[in-house]
Image (cartoon, helix red, strand yellow):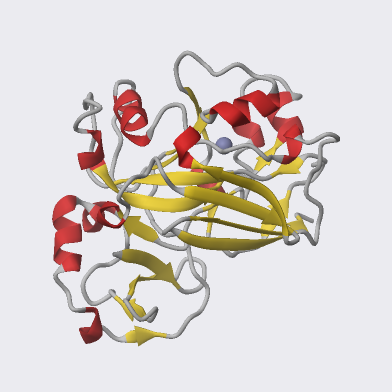
Length: 280
Ligand code: ZN
């Protein structure tokens, strides 16, 4: 299933995309794409519905693909080829940082370049959406706790991230720095999360063209690993790191300016398109 949320900010309705690409209203069945509705039992109930029996919604704004996200956890330097372009060694264990959940926006919403920013950068990432509470789970069982996957854009301000002291959170958490969606694609539709093409363009020019094949710590490992330190809850999102081709790694480095348009996508998970604008 391709689950989504459609409507203006704060008024999104839960919906699914049917096989013909029509948006079908799920609000008669669940209050939102969140919590229990994305548990294994919740997803089984949604899968049993014939989409043709659901009212059709007109295409409009698409919201973040999941609501009620308590934690937005990111994995840093998790692609061997991206670590190389930043000059960093592949870390001996996953590097974890948090992105504030207040950064979450819809996949095609405008992204705000924060005041004082000179180094706003892009990162296409595979997002993992948790569907069941996970604590001390093994790598072998880890995918049982995953509801599905989405495109995640880990927008980053490099000066805030690396030149302003402390750790990375303040360069990752600015308002609108977390577009997720368009869909939460349930895991049954993704045969191998470690074999997905991932791409990103700026103003039509390809910047990132990689694959989750070069991910150092794969999805199952990361879910298991994180669950040794904190419980993961339904609706939590893990952004699993970016392939090479970020602006910071270019010679000379290249960063986003107001008016730039960024498009990104992952095989089977849909695409995003954002216009960057100054946060006045
Ligand atoms: Zn990232």
